[in-house]
Image 1: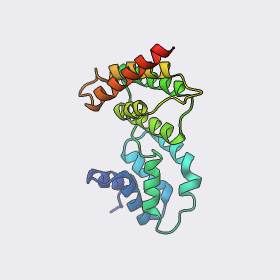
Image 2 (image 1 turned 90 degrees about the vertical axis):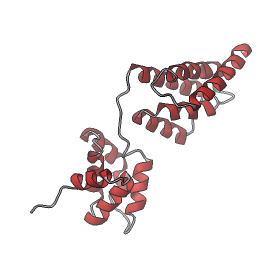
Image 3 (image 1 turned 180 degrees about the horizontal axis):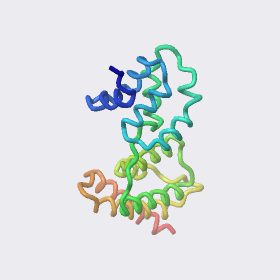
Length: 190
């Protein structure tokens, strides 16, 4: 009887509640083949092959080419943190409009930390727009290079759109009120 494919094993592990990072570690320990193990987890998550290939090429030399012994769990966590296992969603027109306003706000920030930019990219990919909004509402434009009026206005518009989505996160209302206050404050100054 032939053994099940790595993707089948990954799918089984994921169906039992195993995280993608832990499923990767399980397969990589079993096979001693990090790249096929990571690919199998991605495919089990239904990430398109072309996207899987791009993501794994981006991190292959740093994480998968020469793995340290007994580092499977750490590598799985890093792959997850990098977004390798993020399942992309297709945004509806409202979602795309919200992201467009987020991008306007990011441009008006006048500079963004790389970690924040990475988080936003992951949230856009996975459709977690509420978390992206909350992170931007808690940030501020840089004093010398940012444009606060544009920043807060873009976030007000994005927040208003978010409140029209099914089952909006209750925190959006509070963040939207904050953004409206900031927009009003900065509109008076301009």
